[in-house]
Image (cartoon, rainbow, N blue to C red; front, side, top):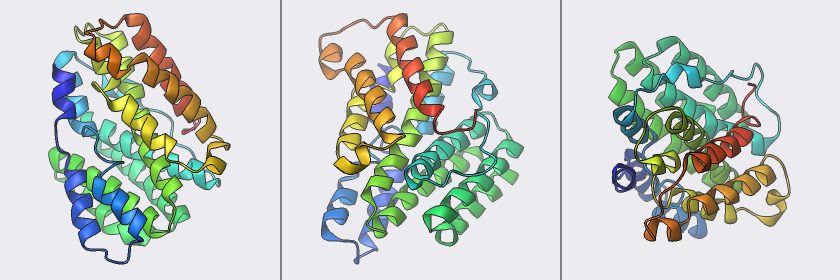
Length: 269
């Protein structure tokens, strides 16, 4: 099944994360252990997932753009989730081969990273993305975006802010699933499980969310993300996959609606 094949890929972000952790001996023991496991990054690559969707149907990527916020939010949890949202948005723009959109997203990424305290540290990665765009090296753009996601998580862990690191990952993947489920719902796709990114992804995201501190879980947008994410995980449970369940268009649309609710809190549109 194509979706399962996507999950079996080892994205460059995981490899980059392993390299980064090995090179950063001052990470706290508990955070280094989490990072070595690749817990937050052991998902299919957004680019590979989008490419599988492109083979299954003919997505009009630009129709899935969301309005970018004129001013980044001031709440740190929303900034962190929004950072992940923007990385997903950059992958989407790269699929559309949209140079101007990617430039605009990179500006917003810089604004979010400045609030989170590591804009200068990751400025070279953003510069690489921009350079690859100008060279129309789209595969390299996606790879650099994966590295950006990995290094952003590392920077947040260096700040002893595991909650924000988890939120960044959730923001990225809820946006990816939002687009994916919408593409599947609107196209003639035989394998409806592509809407969830494949077997196990919603459950992995639920596990990431479960590791966030209880205090943070009471705040928005996390409380909303938790509620909607748990419902999505139930729709696409491992038990249903193992039983050979045939998923329905209604379940795909329900997934898309729940992801859309989350995304509406992460963007201006």
